[in-house]
Image (cartoon, rainbow, N blue to C red; front, side, top):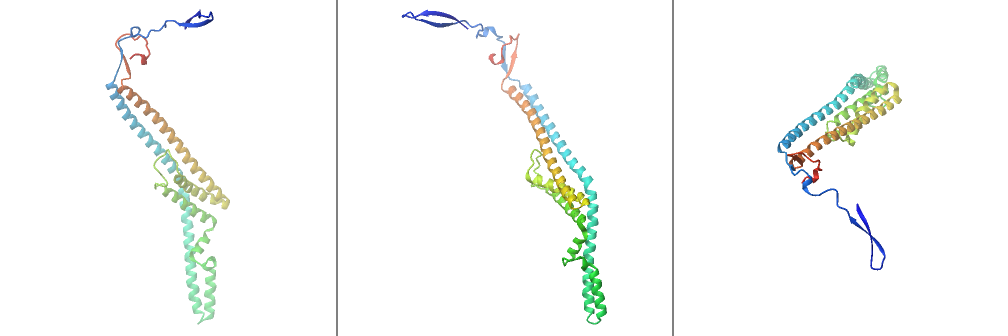
Length: 278
C-alpha cells in the first residue's frame, strides 16, 4: 500500500500521486535461515530406484493374476456348456453317418436289383421297392450327404453348427487376429472370436426350443461375449491407470533426489518457502 499525496502543478490544478510505502517483507537473506540449502540425496535416489524395480515386479504379478482370472472365467463357462454340446454333437454325427451309410447301401441295392430285373422282373421290382424304402427315400438331394443332413433335424443341425462356430472362435483366440495379447484393447478380431465362441454355444443350447430358441440363444450368447470383452478391457485399463500413477510418483521422487530438490537445514528453519531458499 502507498501513502496518497495531493500536489498542485504550476497551473494550480491538483493531481494525485502515490508514494510507495516500505515493504513489510524484506528480500534480504538475513531474515531467513542462511543454513538452509538445496542438496542431492544419492542414497535416497538409490533406495527409490530399488523401490521402482520392486514396483515393476509387483505390477507384472498383478497383470499375470488379472490375465489368469480372465482365462479362468472363460474356462469355467466352457466347462459348463461344452460337455453337453459335445455329447449331443456326437449323437448327431452318429445319426448323420447312419443315414449316409443307409443311402449308399440302398443305392447299391437298387442298382443290383434293377440289374437283376432284366433276368427276373419280380426280383428286380422287389429290389427297387427296398431301395426306395431305404436311404433313397430320405435323400431328396440326391446324395448321401443330403440324406445324412436331412436326418439330423433342426436340433441336430443347430447343435453341430453352434459347436463348430464355438470351436472356430476359440481357435481364433490363438491367433494374432483374435488375440493381440493386450487386455487394455478390444479389437474387431477379438470381438468376432467372442461372438463365434459364445454365440455358437448359445445357439446350440437354444436349439432345444426350436428355431426361435436357436436364434435367441445365439443373440444372448453373442451379447455375453461382447459384454465380457468390453468389461475385461475396462478392468485392464483401470489396473493400468493405477499402476502408471504409482510408477509416476516414484519416478518423480527419483528425479527430485537426482536434481537437488531436497531442502536441507542445519539449523532452525524459519519457515521460509522452499523456492526462496536459494
